[in-house]
Length: 73
Figure 1 (cartoon, rainbow, N blue to C red):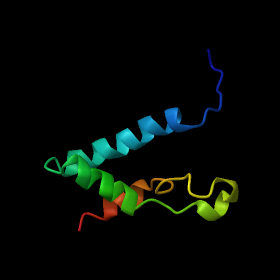
Figure 2: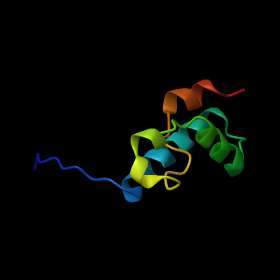
Figure 3: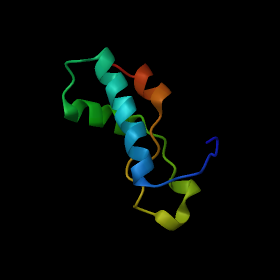
């Protein structure tokens, strides 16, 4: 079957965030879960202005893999 569909929501976000967390751990295997979480949140894109109807419901925003991997300070 070659049909494609569009899905959204937290169920679709989980595998993407988990993949980025795995990439971080591949580069920094000694990072704690808290360090990984902080890194991902600190490098997320603020998308509040793009979603005015969801004020306070967007967490840290949209993950940004490039920013995250560039920021291993």
